[in-house]
Length: 187
Image 1: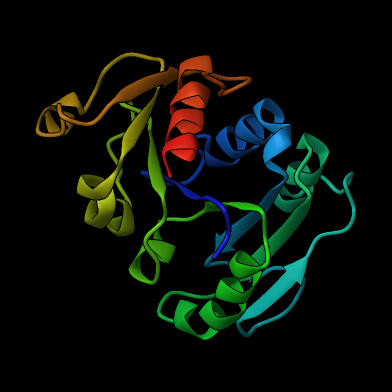
Image 2 (image 1 turned 180 degrees about the horizontal axis):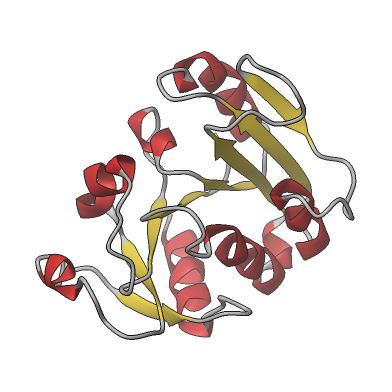
């Protein structure tokens, strides 16, 4: 298995998961990250479960953003709901061959236990994906976007979980980076 595996999940679409992954890659280039995005959506015209390695750092896709941020490698796994198991042998192979791995996904938690799981939450949003609800209690840390609090009542039951503030456009947090570094050193 890789030296360290971190999963960045989120309550839903467009909460900043990719930006958090990119900020972490930029903040820790020495980690030589392999970045893997797990998507339930079809990409590039393929209808089946597919795994692509991104080679172009300037396409504007999430996987190319990883390369622009400094990832050693970038992969996109396209697996419709209920079909991620088909891609997991390849994902595990990629993890085993990597120095350190950051995965953007909630669903992957059904198949692997990372060294660290961070959940990105926008307290202003009411919507929570079922996969986010399922794994919220398993988060090692919460990354809260700054904004007006909305559904913080749900988060009160998770007071034991460390929280870090992130904000657009960078979605970075020096405190979160130090949290990751300390967990990496402890593993």
